[in-house]
Amino acid sequence: MTFEELGLRREVLKSLKELGFEAPTPIQEQAIPYLLQENCDFVGLAQTGTGKTAAFGLPLINNIDTHSKLPQGLIICPTRELCLQISKDLQTYAKFIDCSITAVYGGTDIRKQITDIKRGTSIIVATPGRLVDLINRKVIVLGQVKYVILDEADEMLNMGFKEDIDAILDTTPVDKNVWLFSATMPNEVARIARTYMTDPLEISIGHKNQSNENIDHIYYMVKERDRYEAVKRLIDFNPSIYGLIFCRTKNETAAVAAKLAKEGYNAEPLHGDLTQAMRDTVMGRFRSKELQILVATDVAARGLDIDNITHVINYNLPDDIENYTHRSGRTARAGKKGESLVLVNGKELFKIKAIERQMRSTFTVGNIPNAEEICEIQLMRLIEKTINTEVKEHDIKKFMPQIVSEFESLTKEEVIKKFVSAEFNRFIDYYHRAGDLNAKAGRDDNNENRGDRDRGDRDRGNRSREEGKTRFFVSIGKRDGLNPGALLRVICDATALKSDKIGKIDIMTSFSFFEADEEYTERILRNVNGQNYEGHNVSIEVSAAKPANSGGSFKGGKKFDSPRGSGRFGGDAKKVGAPRGNEDFNRKRNRR
Image (cartoon, rainbow, N blue to C red; front, side, top):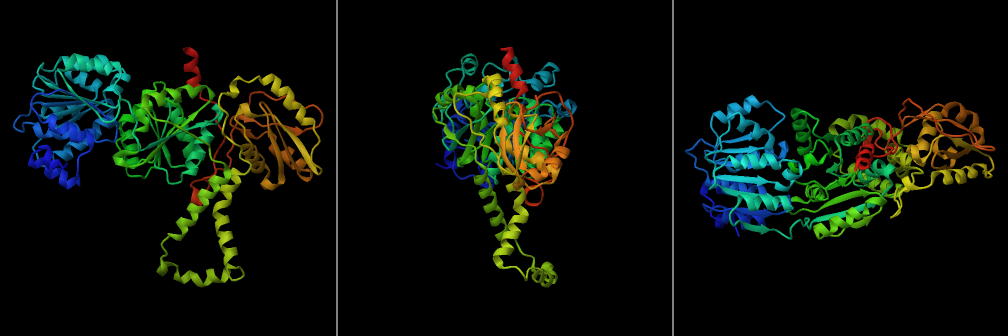
C-alpha cells in the first residue's frame, strides 16, 4: 500500500514525498484510514520506532480547519523532549498547509508560550504539568478541541500524571475524538479508554507489551561492584557504538557519565536536574552524533526519537519492568537491528524472567568480554581506520624524505609493529591482568560470610613465594572496588615500573597480596605507601608472618591510566576502578 491509497490530501502527500516517505508502516496503514473519519475513538498499541507519530500526526494535520485559529488538536505527551520532537514532526508534515503548531512544556519561559498561544494556534503539543498551569491561567481554552491524542499514555501514568490527565480531559468537549497510543496496556491505560472513549477501535501491532523483534536482548551476570567496569568493557568491545546507558536515578546517571567522560569516553548525562537549555544542547550533540554515548534516566527515555541507535545498555533494570520495553525501544527503529544489554546481579534474575513473560521474548545470556577479545576488536578497528585514512599527498610530500630516512633501518614488519604498539600499548597495559567480571547465577558477593573468608584468605599471605620475588600485603581489597588491573595500575603509576615486573596478584575481600622482583622492594614500599585508590589510602608492607590488619578511613585522590588514554583512544589518563555499589538503589531497597 502507498500513502496515496490512504486518503490523505494532496498537500500532506506533497510533504511526505519531499521527506522521502514511500510506504506506510503497519501501524500507519491500519490507523490512518480510520482516523481520517469524522467521529472515531482509537487505541493504538505498538512499540516505539514503528511510526506512531505519523500514524496520528498525518490524519490530524489532514483534518484541521485552516480557517480557525482556535485549538482544534491537542497532543499530550510525557516529556519535554518528546513534546519538541512531535512538534517538529508535525511542522514538517504541515509544510504546505496553513497550520500553526505550538509546543507547551515546562522548564522554559512560560511568557513566550503564552504569547504564542494568544497569537492563535491550531494544534497544541503539551506536557501535562505545563498544560494544566496554562489552563488554570485561562490562557488555553479547550472548548473547541476536536481531537485529543494521548501519546505514550502508559508512561504518563507511570510518571504520576493521572490526575492531570483527568483534569485536562474534563475541560474538553464531550463529542471530541480521543486517540490513545501506547507501547504497553496496563490497567490504568485501559481505564482511560473506558472512561473517555466510545467504542474505540483497538489496533495492536504484535501482542500487547511485545518487544520489537529486531532487538537482541542480552543479559550479563555481574557483581554489584563491577557494574561500571562491565559497562566500560561493553563499550570497548563495541567501538562503533552509538548508544544509550540507562540508570535508575539522577545521581547515578550523573556519576556514571562523569566517570566515563573523565576516562576519555565520549559521553554526557541527560536527566531532570539539567536546565532546558542544557538538555537541548546535549540532545543536539547526540542527534548530530557529535556525542557517542548518552547516559540517561527513564524520564528521558520517551523523548528520544532518534534513528540508528545501535545499543541500549541497562546499567541496572528499572523498578517498573514495563519501563524496560520503552528503554529497549530506543534501538532497532525503522526496521533496523539493535541490541539491548542488561547488567544484573544474582538477586535480579527474577526480573529477567518477568520481562520475558511480559514481552513474549527471550534473553540471551552473555559473557562480559575478556581482555584478549577487547584488544583484538580495538586493534582491528585501529588497522581499519589506518587503511581508510586519506593521505594528503601535497601536505606530506616535503616531509617524506626525512620520514623514509628515519625508517630505513627497519623492515616493513618492524615499522608496522612499532606503529601499532605506539597507539595500542596503553590499551593492552590497561587490560593486562584484568580479571573476569562474569558472576555466577544465584550468588551475591554482598551476602557471603566475609569474616570466615578473610581468616582463610589471610593464611594465604604466609605461603611460600616464588624465588627472587617479594610478596607484599595491601590494605584494600574487593569490597573497596579493587581488582587486579586496578592494583597493577596503582603500583606501576607510583613506581614507574613496567607491568612485567609485577608477579602474581591475589585480591581478597578486605585486603590483597602481590609479588614483585626483590630488587624493587624498597622502591615499592617507598612509593606505593600512601597512594590513593577510589578514596582509600593504600598501605602496603612485606608479607612475612601475620599480615597487618586492613581498614581505616582514608582520603585523597590520584589519577590512573585509562584505556582511552591519548591519541586513538581519547583524552588524558584518568581515574579508573569499579564503584563501591549503587548506594541510591540500596537505600531505596532498604526503605521497602
